[in-house]
Amino acid sequence: MELPKHRVILTQEQIQARIPELARQIEQDMGTENPLVVVVLKGAFIFAADLIRNFNFPHQVDFISISSYGSATESTGVVKLLKDLDEPIKGRTVLLVEDIVDTGLTLHYLYEMLKIREPKRIEVAAFLSKKARREYNVPVKFVGFEVPNVFVVGYGLDYKQMYRNLPFVIGIEE
Ligand code: IMP
Image (cartoon, rainbow, N blue to C red):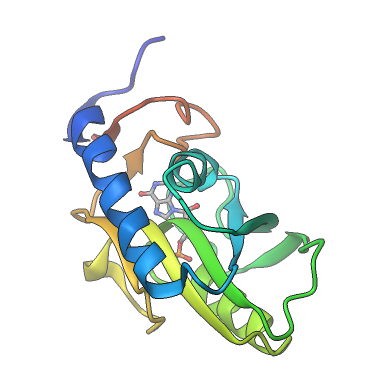
């Protein structure tokens, strides 16, 4: 598979070293609360799969799907709910698992939508964060890596729906 012009941002080794650390932090925070792990499709599915395989505590998994981007690399500013949760979350501890927090719009939308359902608490685990781009202030308790302001691809994140399978993260140079 040919890759677009890029530079490597995170190696497979860096990612695989970080995931167990994050899992331990999450365990310390909510390991006794039987959290519902809410995976935000599609981008977070690889991260979530690796993360929960490092969990040594009871939890359940559900999926939610929203769209904020088209196939372009800039946000449209519009968020749409494509698939809702199967499970009610009232009274539960929720771990929202995201691929990347960019402007924070997507997370803000999700957070506010889920808060209305009266969970015990909602915490966020994001594989990546682009702090420089933040417009919405959403509390992200667990962050895998801070990345520079480039369009990043791989480990679940796509470029025109491709390259999600890369075990490392690259920055696209257009
Ligand atoms: P936000 O709403 O601006 O925070 O954007 C969040 C969503 O946009 C993420 O869940 C991703 O799906 C997508 N996104 C933002 N930045 C990137 C990137 O650099 N590469 C791939 N997808 C991205």
